[in-house]
Length: 410
Image 1 (cartoon, rainbow, N blue to C red):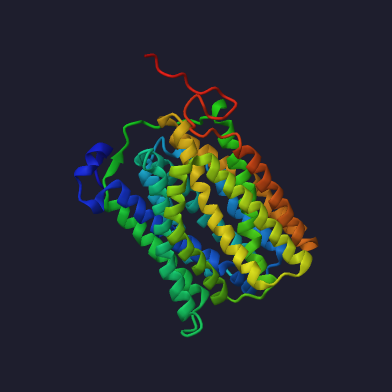
Image 2 (cartoon, rainbow, N blue to C red):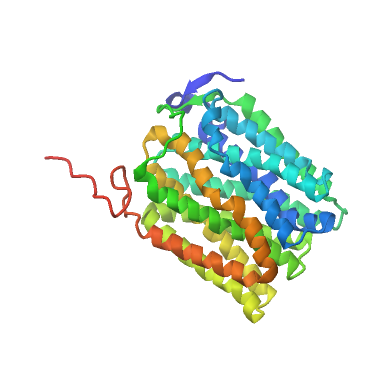
């Protein structure tokens, strides 16, 4: 494993070995496994294990347990460097994804999903911390937008192959999961040995941090986790259960999302840089409320598959604006709080995720429209919270309820 190197000295390295390049490689590797797993999941569980709405709810509840326990990252980074932990977790995600189709039963799918989820959530926790430490505040919104675009571009290749070859070559779930998960694992191992261990100038606090002045960030994270679960669990499930989408059709829908992310993620990053976190998050939450109400309309009024597909793409694009939540925290936080707060935030984000999918799975059996109506209410609650974000957040001025920092004396 490579030696440590101060972050300021990394600029002397070749471009391919610099920290930002490592972030781009990880951003490209992770979604190949995770997004492929997601694209095939609904068809796989219905065909292999005859899942219904309740079963899919329990699956996602199990998947979110490691997110709820992401606070364990704080204990691990006492003994393991963040960069190493992130890459080991990424490799774990890849290996578990590769083995998914080997366990075509409810118990087997739940077990392998738990393992892949540990890798995913611990990687995401550390990755968010590294992004905030390694990217300058002024460049963060734009770079985060490009990182989203890079992940979409890498996944696009995998999805194009699935759409073009699934029927033509008679691919199986096992083949696709093996290839996608194997790619992610190989990239993670390469990064583990090819890059120095970058040392950020601000040592991270290696204990749990809960600060009163971060309360709005915590509240927004909680609502984001609750709201996103409904989209992740039930929007795609609706496309398969109600409209009978097959694997190549679901993947084609994901392809559209990827192209939209490649085009619009850098633009959205620029929008956050120009208009600030307050306005972009207000726009995101208002848009999501409208989308979730329209999802309910599909069941209330019998609206068709074309509208459902359009709403799915818009929904996915609006979630990309969540990068504004990262940059909001970057602006208000102490530099040493990035790692412990990333872990705490992931745990808060997953409080509702642990019980909500299973609970709403039973509601889905009674009224799918009611599930989406609840999501719209959550989006409106997030909108109310976003109104409390200042135009220019900073330490000491985290919300509009706290006074701005005094002007320097002349």
